[in-house]
Image 1 (cartoon, rainbow, N blue to C red):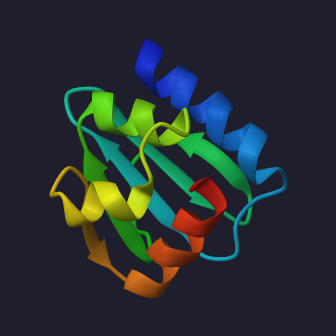
Image 2 (cartoon, rainbow, N blue to C red; image 1 turned 180 degrees about the horizontal axis):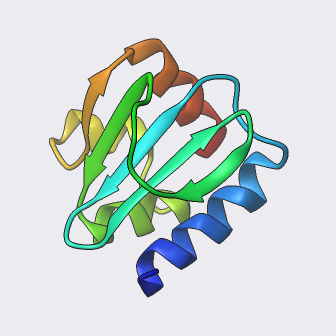
Amino acid sequence: MSKVIETAKAALEERLGDGFDGSVKFEIADEGALIIDQDGVREGSGEADCTLSADAETFEAILDGELNPTTAFMSGKLSVDGDMGTAMRLGSLLG
């Protein structure tokens, strides 16, 4: 597991606690992917209701609270594929 994925996993676990009602895949360019669902956060790729894609710098800024997820999306730094409602629910937990 890359250091970026490891750090992102820990930050998401801290913020989300027992899991998330839905499924989201975070694809971090050149690093890997994380899945968030009712079981928690884990490294890996697979099917999800929504896929969020960005570079490592953008994900780190979102997780550190320096960048609002909606702002990242509107500025083109974060792309969303799939269920926008699921992405917005997760964004409200992270933002």
